Length: 197
Image 1: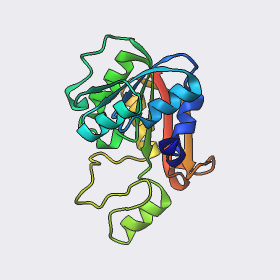
Image 2: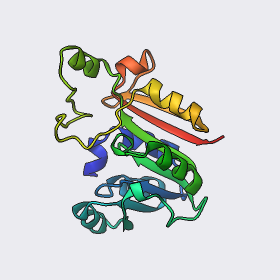
Image 3: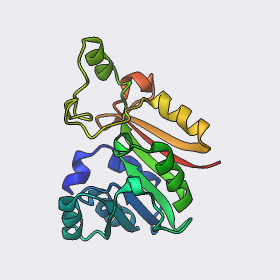
Image 4: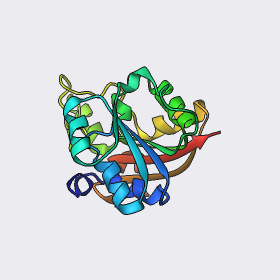
């Protein structure tokens, strides 16, 4: 699968998703993650996406998709209607981070997020040299980025403590390799599984 081979977080997410479960993917893009999870884990899933081209791509990928702005909330979904609610590399583009995480944990038993780690050493170096970071995981220039809330691994963990979310598992990656030593410095992508306290 093309999307799955390009995204290092897909395999980490799939390892946590139990076979045959119900999954909601927020900001699902072209549906690559849901299709991957359906093929690898036999899940039943829905995606939420706002972009017309991505909605069409989801349909072509055989993914159930609802066209909706995540910033409007998840009121169309009943509480605990999914086993997992995923926000894969979309967290940093959300304006109302607190609301979306709270809604994820209302709609699903567990939440899974992945995001580019702004604390990664190459990002820090670019800032130190006077430039906003541009990398494989942060591919946009400062003037055309959809990212409004960049965070580090430490920032996200503090956010979870302050907002009633218990972290169940964390994987930090650099490319596709797990990072266990100095993850906030050496990891470029963070993936978390969490639940309500």
